[in-house]
Length: 226
Image (cartoon, rainbow, N blue to C red; front, side):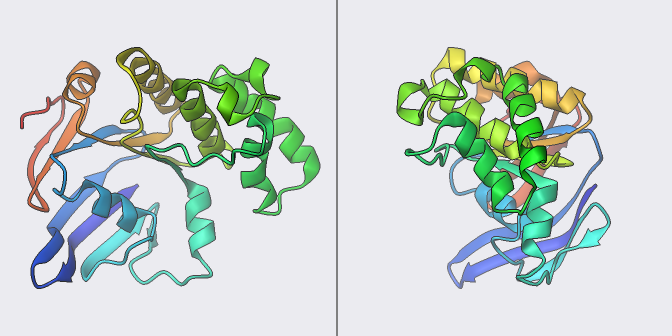
């Protein structure tokens, strides 16, 4: 599903994001990428969604070598990968329904499909009854659930969650992780980049630890060891 071979990202002589990363993640896995700030988690995420290009090495997703992906092909890649960020990135003047449907509209999806899919994904995240509300009328946890729903509209093979609970309290964090678990049970590969020790330890899934841009541990049923 995901394979990185010798991936290095050099920003400058004094700033290296990743160093010789070799990594394979299989279809249907739930993997936590952990490490302190500045260890390379966000760089890894950006390379996987082609927001950054590796300085050296190769990146393969679902059999597609994206190392030198063209700008024209990036939208097709991102339909295979749903991305969830810490800061939600919702459009404040659009309703919950409109925020989710907008992701389909920009991809040119027909109205009939939008009308079918949006209620489905809102149901998955437990917001079917709040489709007409605006982001300002939602709690932080609910806003993140809207972001998750939006990430699901193209039925991606992979979900990448970059610090999705960073702005949430403990209760809302648990709810977001449970939704990610449910999505994973449907067969979607989930990558969770986080520094939240409690979440990682409770998951008891594969944990990849980064330090100084390098993989220093890869435990199948691991814990946050830093």
